[in-house]
Amino acid sequence: MSTQKFTYLIIFCLATFFCQAQIHDRMDIHLTDIKTTKAQEFDQINWKSNYTLSKEGEPDLPAYRVSYVLPVDAKLTGITFQSHEKQLFKQDVYIYPMQHPRPVGNAEEIAFVQPDKKIYESDTPYPERLYDIESDVIMHGYHVVTICIYPFEYLPKSRVLNYYPPARRSL
Image 1: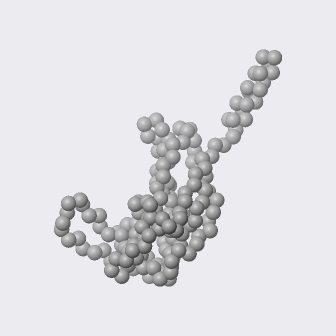
Image 2: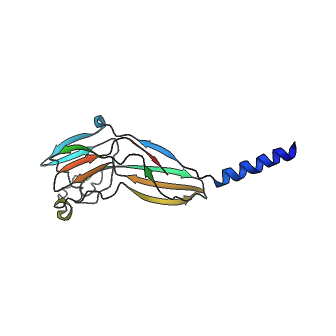
Image 3: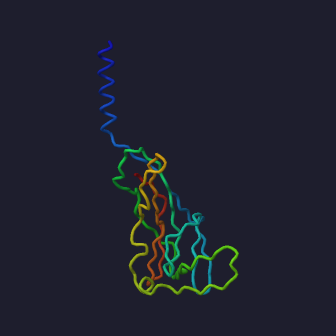
C-alpha cells in the first residue's frame, strides 16, 4: 500500500511541476463610471482611476494600473485579453492635453501646455497598445509585476474616443 501511495505522490508532484500557473483577473468599465467635462475647448475624461499615461502635451486619458505578486521563480510570458472588441464612446471629442504637475500650495500661474501637434494631427490610435508592463521585479523577496492597462483609445484627428468593455485578462 505504501508503494502505491508513493507512486501517486510522485505522479502528483510531476503533474503539478509541469502545469503552468495562470492568474486571471477582470477589469470592468461601465459607461456610468465615465464622466466627461468641458475645459475651455477641450474635453476631460474622468474615470474611477486617477492614474494617467500621458506626458505633457499628449492626450490626458485615464489608465488602470495594477500589481500582482507572482511566485518568485515565475516567468512572465505574456498577457492575454479575452475581449479586444473596442466600442465607440463618443465622437467629436477633443481630449485635454496633459499639463505640468502643479505642486500643492503653489498659487503661481503655470503656463498652459499646448497639444502635441504630432499626436493631435494624426489618426494613429493613442495609445498605440492596450497595455505596458511597467515593472517585473523582485522586491523584498516577492516577485511583483506591475501592469498599466489603457482602456481608452483616442483617434485625435477624427476626434473619436473608443473604450474597451469589461474583459478578463490572464497572466
